[in-house]
Length: 355
Length: 207
Image 1 (tube, rainbow over the protein chains, first blue to last red):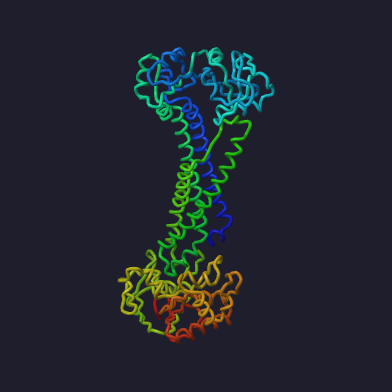
Image 2: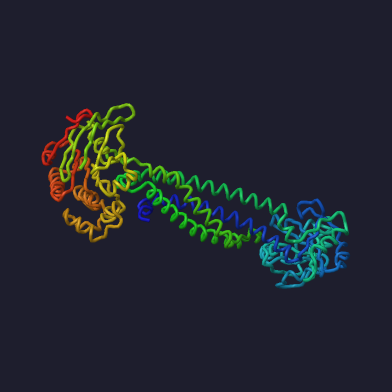
């Protein structure tokens, strides 16, 4: 610890390098996880089976016949089904706002803060977006004006920052019948059997359990992969930063390592001492980065401009993985400088050279 | 105590030491003198196990250096070293610098050792808070903390004034009287005359 304090500037630079890398990993991972988690919780809260158009990779482009709902409801074990259209549109000065066309039987998902659920030519708006509207009585979506009949709140950022209208109105805007049908099965029902029965209704649909849909949804995979790639880049940049800064630090402390070697301190002990210093740096960086990331995420979550769509949370699992990555980063980054330090030749000291 | 036979050393193709033969008895105060670049520091490095010779044998109390398996442990347990520059670590206190050589040494042991050298009041000071002569005494204390049988000192007075240089040699002399072998490389013939035995190295050979 004293060695770290003695080289304050370099220790600070190493810490900053580590902290920025770890914060990047935290932010990119938690925000992408947040996006995935928001969308999947939205789907999961509606049912355990999801019906979309076959061979369409994105729910935004899916179009299925809403009349299937009636036939689905008649299948044994089905409790209730509901339909949803997902789309996006500019609203006032906001460039992209999530638009949800909902069948009437799922309006009660949205907890009203004021007003009533929408009828034809009406919308309810999420609390987050309502606060940003100049005109709090009506909104224009795709050249059509809708009266604001109520304001709702939702724990899901995508919904809280969105607009909900009847599925018929949404169908006219987005020129489709429904993006998806969400099926809620009875507690003792055989989900697989229900999925097979729904599949038999039409060749144009794809039916999956919501969990399976979430696990295999291409958009989630793309987000996850991108997040992993960016995290890996941040990790590598942090690693390179540590290697270079530790190399400079170790080089400046060569006489210290030389004297230690001359005093009979083994190379493994010198490597170990540098590793311990690195571990301490990794630990301090992780704690600082964890706190900093939470502060940033708090501001991001509450930033009006982001409409509540960017909502990252650092789970215990993510914190654990990033902790391991931080310690790995600091230790891996110091291995080469530590081995170089351990090789310091005390003979150079003895010969009067100030190493 | 130490017998050196037919010792030769090359740095790449440059001959540094040629056919050195010498014998040092326990408790002797030996000076190795010579001009800068004569090979005395190389000889000291080899004798203190820091450098492996190209050829030749060094037998220390019946053990040939070639047969020592853990040279770090051997050095730690038998040899003390004092450099031309004190090489104290600035961010460690005097006590902590001495603990580098023996982490188990207690504050009392270190205090007693410093008292022997007349600098016990510096135990909690840092190197940049004490004088050059005091730093070299701390370096001597660091070399002594493991009770080594032999101490190698390379130009230990190189950065000291004549008064402090004499003090250091007096300390060495008193250590020799207590049975420690001291081998000093120096170019100062006046100081060398205070030792029991002088080897002069010139162009890599003992004169």
